[in-house]
Picture 1 (tube, one colour):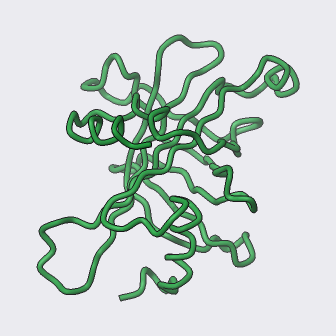
Picture 2: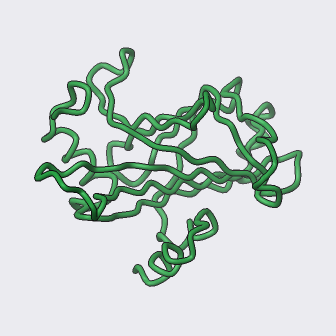
Length: 188
């Protein structure tokens, strides 16, 4: 079964670029950006001062079918320049080709219950993820059980973010599952 008309070979090639290798049963990709004061000075309407993105791909172990179904998910962490605290979001992803992108394959990631989402492309050199935001629901880390506190809305200088590939351990702060956290800390 093709993923909404996406060619499997193209999806596999995108995955190999994102995860720097074919992902196998489970793989992680981490992208990080901390915006320098001079960048923020040039973009006075940018609300985000730092962003992390962890993309995970996994083939569930209990699949009864012979066809492998790959699950993609994301966790996004961010800090604001004029608000204290750490904020995050998470959801599931699928490959897609946006109408306005020519033929560029991306991951489209959404948050449950109409929480908006992001889409993720890879830079030409595969060293960066290009994250595009329209609206994505976020939570304050110190209050994970409360209602979502806010949404990051992609306006003015908060529409497109270039995040640089980083060591997987840089994204450890986004992981809440203890087993998964231990796995990430072991990765090199």
